[in-house]
Image 1 (cartoon, rainbow, N blue to C red):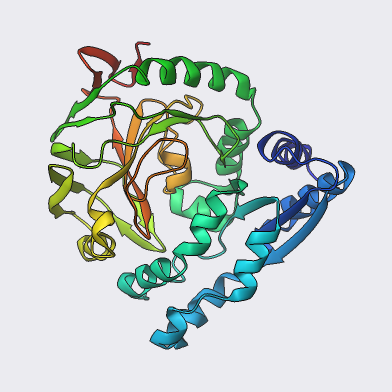
Image 2: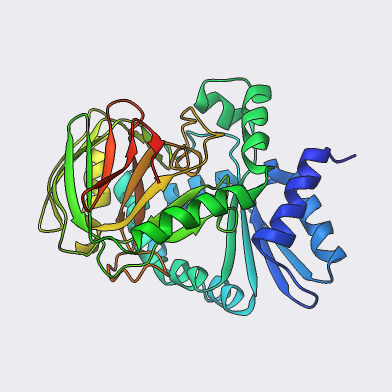
Length: 354
Protein backbone atom coordinates (compact mmCIF):
# COMPACT_ATOMS: atom_id res chain seq x y z
CA UNK A 1 0.00 0.00 0.00
CA UNK A 2 1.42 3.35 -1.07
CA UNK A 3 2.08 5.91 1.67
CA UNK A 4 -0.45 8.76 1.59
CA UNK A 5 2.39 11.33 1.43
CA UNK A 6 3.68 9.68 -1.76
CA UNK A 7 0.16 9.57 -3.23
CA UNK A 8 -0.29 13.26 -2.45
CA UNK A 9 3.04 14.11 -4.08
CA UNK A 10 2.12 12.10 -7.20
CA UNK A 11 -1.19 13.96 -7.41
CA UNK A 12 0.63 17.30 -7.20
CA UNK A 13 3.17 16.32 -9.85
CA UNK A 14 0.60 15.09 -12.36
CA UNK A 15 -2.26 17.56 -11.89
CA UNK A 16 -0.41 20.70 -10.82
CA UNK A 17 3.26 20.61 -11.80
CA UNK A 18 2.83 18.95 -15.20
CA UNK A 19 -0.90 19.64 -15.70
CA UNK A 20 -1.33 16.36 -17.59
CA UNK A 21 -4.45 16.20 -19.76
CA UNK A 22 -6.26 13.35 -21.47
CA UNK A 23 -4.25 12.08 -24.43
CA UNK A 24 -0.98 13.70 -23.30
CA UNK A 25 2.25 11.72 -23.34
CA UNK A 26 4.50 11.81 -20.28
CA UNK A 27 8.05 10.52 -19.91
CA UNK A 28 8.99 9.50 -16.36
CA UNK A 29 12.75 9.26 -15.96
CA UNK A 30 14.12 7.90 -12.70
CA UNK A 31 16.04 5.17 -10.88
CA UNK A 32 14.93 1.96 -9.11
CA UNK A 33 15.25 3.64 -5.68
CA UNK A 34 12.23 5.85 -6.51
CA UNK A 35 9.97 2.91 -7.44
CA UNK A 36 7.16 3.92 -5.06
CA UNK A 37 6.81 7.42 -6.45
CA UNK A 38 7.32 6.31 -10.07
CA UNK A 39 4.44 3.81 -9.78
CA UNK A 40 2.19 6.32 -7.99
CA UNK A 41 2.81 8.89 -10.74
CA UNK A 42 2.32 6.25 -13.45
CA UNK A 43 -1.06 5.34 -11.96
CA UNK A 44 -2.13 8.97 -11.61
CA UNK A 45 -1.26 9.71 -15.26
CA UNK A 46 -3.44 6.80 -16.33
CA UNK A 47 -6.25 8.05 -14.10
CA UNK A 48 -6.31 11.43 -15.87
CA UNK A 49 -6.26 9.80 -19.30
CA UNK A 50 -2.60 10.36 -20.17
CA UNK A 51 -0.06 8.02 -21.72
CA UNK A 52 2.88 7.36 -19.34
CA UNK A 53 6.19 5.93 -20.41
CA UNK A 54 8.92 5.21 -17.89
CA UNK A 55 12.65 5.13 -18.35
CA UNK A 56 14.42 3.59 -15.37
CA UNK A 57 18.20 3.92 -15.17
CA UNK A 58 20.72 2.45 -12.73
CA UNK A 59 23.09 4.91 -11.05
CA UNK A 60 25.91 2.48 -11.75
CA UNK A 61 25.29 2.76 -15.50
CA UNK A 62 26.84 6.23 -15.41
CA UNK A 63 29.87 4.92 -13.54
CA UNK A 64 30.38 2.15 -16.09
CA UNK A 65 29.97 4.68 -18.91
CA UNK A 66 32.54 7.16 -17.60
CA UNK A 67 35.04 4.42 -16.73
CA UNK A 68 34.91 2.79 -20.16
CA UNK A 69 33.67 5.27 -22.80
CA UNK A 70 36.07 6.64 -25.39
CA UNK A 71 36.16 10.37 -26.16
CA UNK A 72 34.03 9.65 -29.22
CA UNK A 73 31.44 7.93 -27.05
CA UNK A 74 31.53 10.76 -24.49
CA UNK A 75 30.64 13.19 -27.29
CA UNK A 76 27.94 11.00 -28.84
CA UNK A 77 24.25 12.00 -28.67
CA UNK A 78 21.83 9.10 -28.93
CA UNK A 79 19.28 9.73 -31.70
CA UNK A 80 16.84 7.62 -29.66
CA UNK A 81 17.16 9.94 -26.65
CA UNK A 82 16.69 12.97 -28.86
CA UNK A 83 13.65 11.51 -30.62
CA UNK A 84 11.99 10.59 -27.30
CA UNK A 85 12.42 14.13 -25.99
CA UNK A 86 11.01 15.53 -29.23
CA UNK A 87 7.88 13.38 -29.16
CA UNK A 88 6.82 13.59 -25.52
CA UNK A 89 4.53 16.37 -24.24
CA UNK A 90 5.61 16.30 -20.60
CA UNK A 91 8.81 15.18 -18.87
CA UNK A 92 9.19 14.25 -15.20
CA UNK A 93 12.58 13.64 -13.65
CA UNK A 94 12.42 11.88 -10.27
CA UNK A 95 15.84 12.20 -8.71
CA UNK A 96 17.20 10.09 -5.90
CA UNK A 97 20.44 8.27 -5.21
CA UNK A 98 21.58 4.98 -3.73
CA UNK A 99 25.20 6.12 -3.49
CA UNK A 100 26.07 9.82 -3.54
CA UNK A 101 29.73 9.10 -4.25
CA UNK A 102 29.51 6.70 -7.17
CA UNK A 103 31.08 9.26 -9.54
CA UNK A 104 33.46 10.80 -7.03
CA UNK A 105 36.49 9.12 -8.60
CA UNK A 106 35.53 10.26 -12.12
CA UNK A 107 37.25 13.40 -13.39
CA UNK A 108 34.95 16.41 -13.13
CA UNK A 109 36.35 17.58 -16.48
CA UNK A 110 35.19 14.32 -18.10
CA UNK A 111 31.68 14.76 -16.66
CA UNK A 112 31.65 18.39 -17.79
CA UNK A 113 32.63 17.30 -21.31
CA UNK A 114 29.63 14.94 -21.37
CA UNK A 115 27.35 17.75 -20.17
CA UNK A 116 28.59 19.86 -23.07
CA UNK A 117 27.99 17.05 -25.56
CA UNK A 118 24.37 16.43 -24.56
CA UNK A 119 23.44 20.11 -24.17
CA UNK A 120 21.17 20.01 -27.28
CA UNK A 121 18.96 17.50 -25.43
CA UNK A 122 18.91 19.68 -22.31
CA UNK A 123 17.89 22.69 -24.38
CA UNK A 124 15.11 20.62 -25.97
CA UNK A 125 13.83 19.65 -22.51
CA UNK A 126 13.61 23.32 -21.53
CA UNK A 127 11.18 23.89 -24.40
CA UNK A 128 8.77 21.33 -22.91
CA UNK A 129 6.56 21.29 -19.82
CA UNK A 130 8.88 19.60 -17.34
CA UNK A 131 9.36 19.08 -13.64
CA UNK A 132 12.13 17.60 -11.50
CA UNK A 133 11.30 16.10 -8.11
CA UNK A 134 13.54 14.64 -5.47
CA UNK A 135 12.63 11.47 -3.58
CA UNK A 136 14.07 10.58 -0.16
CA UNK A 137 16.73 7.88 0.11
CA UNK A 138 19.21 6.70 2.71
CA UNK A 139 22.07 8.06 0.59
CA UNK A 140 20.55 11.55 0.36
CA UNK A 141 19.86 11.53 4.10
CA UNK A 142 23.45 10.49 4.77
CA UNK A 143 24.72 13.38 2.63
CA UNK A 144 22.53 15.76 4.66
CA UNK A 145 23.88 14.27 7.90
CA UNK A 146 20.45 13.26 9.22
CA UNK A 147 18.32 10.12 9.47
CA UNK A 148 16.08 9.00 6.62
CA UNK A 149 13.07 9.64 8.87
CA UNK A 150 14.13 13.25 9.49
CA UNK A 151 14.98 13.76 5.81
CA UNK A 152 11.57 12.44 4.76
CA UNK A 153 9.78 14.68 7.25
CA UNK A 154 11.58 17.78 5.94
CA UNK A 155 11.02 16.75 2.33
CA UNK A 156 7.29 16.07 2.54
CA UNK A 157 6.69 19.19 4.63
CA UNK A 158 8.37 21.17 1.86
CA UNK A 159 6.53 19.60 -1.10
CA UNK A 160 3.07 18.76 0.21
CA UNK A 161 1.92 22.30 0.90
CA UNK A 162 -0.38 24.98 -0.45
CA UNK A 163 1.68 26.28 -3.36
CA UNK A 164 -0.66 29.22 -3.86
CA UNK A 165 0.92 30.94 -0.85
CA UNK A 166 4.42 30.74 -2.31
CA UNK A 167 3.06 31.74 -5.71
CA UNK A 168 1.47 34.88 -4.26
CA UNK A 169 4.67 35.80 -2.43
CA UNK A 170 6.70 35.12 -5.56
CA UNK A 171 4.44 37.18 -7.80
CA UNK A 172 4.64 40.14 -5.43
CA UNK A 173 8.44 39.98 -5.42
CA UNK A 174 8.62 39.38 -9.18
CA UNK A 175 6.38 42.36 -9.91
CA UNK A 176 8.74 44.60 -7.98
CA UNK A 177 11.91 43.20 -9.55
CA UNK A 178 10.49 43.58 -13.06
CA UNK A 179 10.47 47.34 -12.50
CA UNK A 180 14.02 47.51 -11.15
CA UNK A 181 17.29 48.09 -12.95
CA UNK A 182 20.08 47.16 -10.57
CA UNK A 183 20.70 44.51 -7.92
CA UNK A 184 23.35 44.71 -5.20
CA UNK A 185 24.13 41.73 -2.99
CA UNK A 186 25.98 42.47 0.27
CA UNK A 187 27.17 40.15 3.01
CA UNK A 188 30.19 38.29 4.30
CA UNK A 189 32.97 38.63 1.71
CA UNK A 190 30.41 39.99 -0.72
CA UNK A 191 29.58 43.13 -2.62
CA UNK A 192 28.31 42.34 -6.10
CA UNK A 193 26.29 44.58 -8.38
CA UNK A 194 24.61 43.79 -11.72
CA UNK A 195 21.75 44.93 -13.92
CA UNK A 196 18.41 43.21 -14.55
CA UNK A 197 16.96 46.08 -16.58
CA UNK A 198 14.39 44.81 -19.09
CA UNK A 199 14.58 41.24 -17.87
CA UNK A 200 11.62 39.19 -16.63
CA UNK A 201 11.35 37.49 -13.25
CA UNK A 202 9.91 33.96 -13.13
CA UNK A 203 8.21 32.45 -10.09
CA UNK A 204 9.02 28.85 -9.11
CA UNK A 205 6.03 27.59 -7.14
CA UNK A 206 5.94 23.84 -7.64
CA UNK A 207 5.77 23.74 -11.43
CA UNK A 208 9.47 23.34 -12.23
CA UNK A 209 10.88 21.59 -9.20
CA UNK A 210 9.82 19.86 -6.02
CA UNK A 211 10.88 21.14 -3.57
CA UNK A 212 10.36 24.59 -5.07
CA UNK A 213 10.04 28.14 -3.88
CA UNK A 214 12.10 30.78 -5.65
CA UNK A 215 11.99 33.73 -7.99
CA UNK A 216 14.65 33.99 -10.66
CA UNK A 217 15.75 36.18 -13.52
CA UNK A 218 18.82 36.65 -15.70
CA UNK A 219 21.29 39.53 -15.25
CA UNK A 220 22.48 41.49 -18.26
CA UNK A 221 25.40 39.47 -19.50
CA UNK A 222 28.14 42.11 -19.19
CA UNK A 223 26.91 43.91 -16.08
CA UNK A 224 28.25 42.03 -13.04
CA UNK A 225 31.04 43.69 -11.08
CA UNK A 226 32.41 42.86 -7.65
CA UNK A 227 32.88 39.76 -5.57
CA UNK A 228 30.70 37.19 -3.85
CA UNK A 229 31.34 34.45 -1.31
CA UNK A 230 29.04 31.41 -1.28
CA UNK A 231 28.80 29.85 2.19
CA UNK A 232 26.61 26.84 1.39
CA UNK A 233 28.50 23.84 -0.11
CA UNK A 234 27.26 22.40 -3.41
CA UNK A 235 27.76 19.05 -5.10
CA UNK A 236 28.65 18.30 -8.71
CA UNK A 237 28.15 14.58 -9.37
CA UNK A 238 29.80 13.53 -6.11
CA UNK A 239 32.44 16.27 -6.17
CA UNK A 240 31.80 18.70 -3.31
CA UNK A 241 32.62 22.36 -3.81
CA UNK A 242 32.73 24.62 -0.73
CA UNK A 243 33.79 28.13 0.18
CA UNK A 244 33.50 29.38 -3.40
CA UNK A 245 34.49 32.99 -4.06
CA UNK A 246 34.00 34.57 -7.48
CA UNK A 247 35.21 37.96 -8.70
CA UNK A 248 33.44 39.54 -11.68
CA UNK A 249 34.48 42.33 -14.04
CA UNK A 250 32.05 43.45 -16.74
CA UNK A 251 30.08 40.23 -16.39
CA UNK A 252 33.04 37.83 -16.60
CA UNK A 253 34.53 35.68 -13.84
CA UNK A 254 38.10 36.99 -13.61
CA UNK A 255 39.08 35.18 -10.42
CA UNK A 256 37.73 32.03 -8.81
CA UNK A 257 38.75 30.10 -5.74
CA UNK A 258 37.29 27.49 -3.41
CA UNK A 259 38.23 26.13 -0.01
CA UNK A 260 37.30 22.66 -1.26
CA UNK A 261 36.88 21.33 -4.79
CA UNK A 262 38.70 24.12 -6.58
CA UNK A 263 39.74 21.80 -9.41
CA UNK A 264 36.08 20.87 -9.98
CA UNK A 265 35.11 24.56 -9.93
CA UNK A 266 37.72 25.34 -12.58
CA UNK A 267 36.49 22.43 -14.73
CA UNK A 268 33.00 23.95 -14.72
CA UNK A 269 34.26 27.43 -15.58
CA UNK A 270 36.39 26.04 -18.42
CA UNK A 271 33.52 24.34 -20.27
CA UNK A 272 32.91 27.26 -22.63
CA UNK A 273 32.94 31.11 -22.61
CA UNK A 274 29.33 31.24 -21.39
CA UNK A 275 30.29 29.36 -18.22
CA UNK A 276 32.17 32.46 -17.09
CA UNK A 277 28.98 34.54 -17.02
CA UNK A 278 25.91 34.59 -14.77
CA UNK A 279 22.89 32.92 -16.34
CA UNK A 280 20.57 33.17 -13.34
CA UNK A 281 20.00 35.23 -10.21
CA UNK A 282 17.47 33.70 -7.83
CA UNK A 283 16.05 34.28 -4.36
CA UNK A 284 14.86 31.38 -2.17
CA UNK A 285 11.38 31.95 -0.73
CA UNK A 286 10.44 28.55 0.74
CA UNK A 287 10.61 29.29 4.46
CA UNK A 288 9.63 25.71 5.32
CA UNK A 289 13.21 24.89 4.35
CA UNK A 290 15.70 26.26 6.85
CA UNK A 291 18.77 24.01 6.78
CA UNK A 292 21.16 22.95 4.00
CA UNK A 293 20.54 19.40 2.84
CA UNK A 294 23.57 18.94 0.59
CA UNK A 295 21.55 19.09 -2.63
CA UNK A 296 21.18 22.20 -4.80
CA UNK A 297 17.54 21.40 -5.60
CA UNK A 298 16.82 21.73 -1.88
CA UNK A 299 19.25 24.39 -0.77
CA UNK A 300 18.64 27.05 -3.43
CA UNK A 301 15.00 27.22 -2.26
CA UNK A 302 15.82 27.97 1.40
CA UNK A 303 13.99 31.12 2.44
CA UNK A 304 16.43 33.98 3.01
CA UNK A 305 19.12 32.80 0.58
CA UNK A 306 20.00 33.78 -2.95
CA UNK A 307 21.80 31.92 -5.70
CA UNK A 308 23.72 32.65 -8.86
CA UNK A 309 24.13 30.14 -11.66
CA UNK A 310 26.99 30.21 -14.11
CA UNK A 311 26.08 29.19 -17.64
CA UNK A 312 22.99 29.35 -19.80
CA UNK A 313 20.08 31.68 -19.10
CA UNK A 314 16.75 30.11 -18.26
CA UNK A 315 13.73 30.45 -20.60
CA UNK A 316 11.26 33.19 -19.82
CA UNK A 317 13.79 35.59 -18.31
CA UNK A 318 14.95 37.31 -21.49
CA UNK A 319 18.52 36.23 -20.78
CA UNK A 320 20.86 35.70 -23.70
CA UNK A 321 23.78 33.82 -22.21
CA UNK A 322 24.55 30.54 -23.96
CA UNK A 323 26.49 27.66 -22.45
CA UNK A 324 26.46 23.88 -22.13
CA UNK A 325 26.14 24.20 -18.37
CA UNK A 326 23.91 25.74 -15.74
CA UNK A 327 25.27 25.35 -12.23
CA UNK A 328 24.14 27.11 -9.06
CA UNK A 329 26.09 28.50 -6.12
CA UNK A 330 24.17 29.49 -2.98
CA UNK A 331 24.64 32.55 -0.78
CA UNK A 332 23.26 32.54 2.78
CA UNK A 333 21.90 36.00 3.62
CA UNK A 334 20.29 35.11 6.95
CA UNK A 335 23.10 36.65 9.00
CA UNK A 336 24.27 40.14 8.07
CA UNK A 337 23.24 39.83 4.41
CA UNK A 338 21.01 41.91 2.18
CA UNK A 339 19.76 42.42 -1.36
CA UNK A 340 19.24 45.96 -2.62
CA UNK A 341 17.05 46.49 -5.70
CA UNK A 342 17.81 49.94 -7.11
CA UNK A 343 17.97 51.89 -3.84
CA UNK A 344 15.55 49.80 -1.74
CA UNK A 345 16.58 46.94 0.52
CA UNK A 346 14.23 44.07 -0.35
CA UNK A 347 15.80 41.36 1.82
CA UNK A 348 17.82 41.74 5.01
CA UNK A 349 19.12 39.04 7.33
CA UNK A 350 16.97 36.51 5.46
CA UNK A 351 13.73 38.45 5.83
CA UNK A 352 11.84 39.69 2.78
CA UNK A 353 10.83 43.34 3.06
CA UNK A 354 8.53 43.41 0.01
